[in-house]
Figure (cartoon, rainbow, N blue to C red):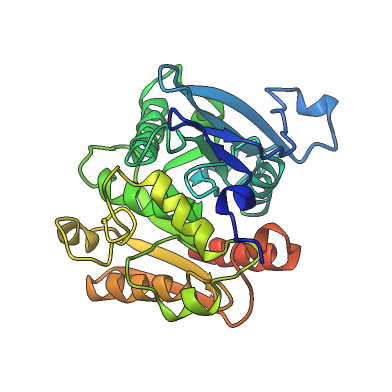
Length: 322
């Protein structure tokens, strides 16, 4: 019997210099740009890419509905802002990948909302906390648009800076949580982070949980692939009980958790990481965080990317939360 190779499963190759060759050939979606909606009547949403930090090669993809709803048929409604962090175990994927682009598109049109999807740096070339730093850069970029009379027009014209949410799926949920903690130390006015939306957030730990053992051979994210992602993403020498991976371990971050505000946590009981998510929710509740937790009896990790009905359920949960 051949040994399971997590590198092969993730379609990556580790190079001698410690970088990765990513062989994942996902279809990429270009942005629409700032087109005239009247000339594209069937276009439900508009997207544009803007640089975040050229030195770090980070950037943002902004999504907006092509028709902005109005409050009284004359003034455009001010839409909530969702700063979104994509899946990929911190080591693969891009905001331009078709499945991430389409999910952000559904969020922007269904809620509706302005979505700012963050192309953060990937590990192992840029180990944690690089992605968390890029998340803070994105939050500060949103603040800059609010303060600059020549700021990004889509945000200045259509966004409600007092209703900003941090959202992510899987490792993106991990980034959203860590960014939420870091943002507590920063003056963000007039931006206000109104809540965290954590869809199947990815956490780990040295001690195996029951769900990790039961679903170790999961087809989407088998346990060895998750272990490898953490090995490549965590600071060199850190184990899975590092606070970036396992925030349930007591540490200095504990003092801040109670200040987080509202959190929506979504999970599925057929997901290897479900035990961690439930433990995470219990930790938030102990710290006095207002938590809405929705754990579905069936479903697997990232099911909402492949099952449109589950995606709709997720969007309705988010709509109610916002």
